[in-house]
Amino acid sequence: MRVLHQGAGAVNVVLLLCLFACFAPSLVSSITVSSPAELHASKGDTVILPCSFISTSRPTSKMTVDWSYRHQSGGPPQIFFHFSSQAFPPPEGQFMGRIRWHGSPARGDASIALINATLNDNGTYTCSVRNPPDVYGSPLSQTVLTVTPKSASIRFTDVAILLAFILLPSALITLILIGRMLCSKQRLDQSKAYRSPIEVTDGEEYGDHLPAAKVKKTTCCDLYMMDPEDIEEHYKLKTRSPIDEGFAESQC
Image 1 (cartoon, helix red, strand yellow):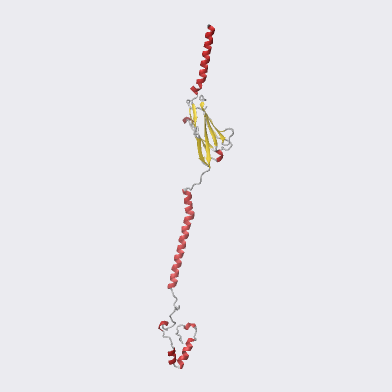
Image 2: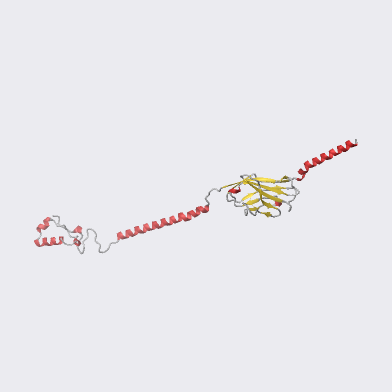
């Protein structure tokens, strides 16, 4: 009977140990890490990779944060950032000089910033937080980043530059051409209104002669009644140089 009692006691101890082993992790594994499942960004943007955690223990110098990256084509993840009391950015590789610590452990924030995102940065980013004694639970969280080419857009500054270098010179050239046209027209009007004192127009005669409209034209009858000397003088006048065009000619 004593042996049976001792055997029953041993079984109870084993059951208690099994129960403790099953429920003990749930008592201390209260850390939970979370991050968005997907992120989208454009090429050249600064992307914030969020990562938050909840822990029953206050963050201490023993808390660590690790960020790893796996390319979208596959392959094993590679740790490129580590935080333990201070940030340790990647000293080499594709993320060198492009990762900044953006977290605050006291606020449960373990985020980082990715500067100048490229199409080669597409892949899965994993955030891992350890805060002893909270070492169980869900210390990992993953985010899939998709970087796309930036769409072309016209900014206000671009429009202002186009106006300054295209429309303004065009307007200035148009004003200059209009000014030249007005000046040319004015000069033409002045040239028409001005006449030289020696200029003779149609219907005028030189000297003290009367206008051609008032000169009586010589007819055949007049020539018939002229004296011979007058007729000779008439033909002399007719054969003179073109400067005497003001004199009337016979229509015979």
